[in-house]
Image (cartoon, rainbow, N blue to C red):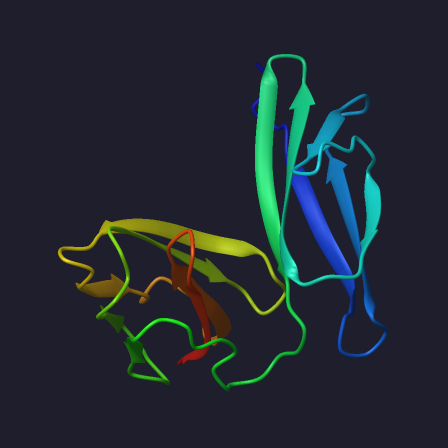
Length: 163
């Protein structure tokens, strides 16, 4: 097994500015095979819609996965508001509190960097649709992050400043 095998996923452009985003998957080993979540096997792709794009890289007995979120615009406002939810404080230093009142049973939280890289993911089980969770963000470098949470039917995305 090659312990130096690494996958790098980059994003160039903006849906706000140009209406397109270029995604490129690269790996540290020549001959690496790539598979995107839409089934394509190319290294570069142009996307025109907001969403989470995932890629897997395979080389010999090694594999690596990464994802990137493409958003419409970057700002500190709430992007979607379909769940009765609160995410606070904002800005934050050590901990973020998440409260959801109508979230269903399974809640997923994904944290993305300002460049769209997936930073962390959490899965929670709500009781009677209600969830109160505390997320430790002390390990995150200072910056702006997207916190996307919800269930299969409803999602909220918030921009959070980590100090």
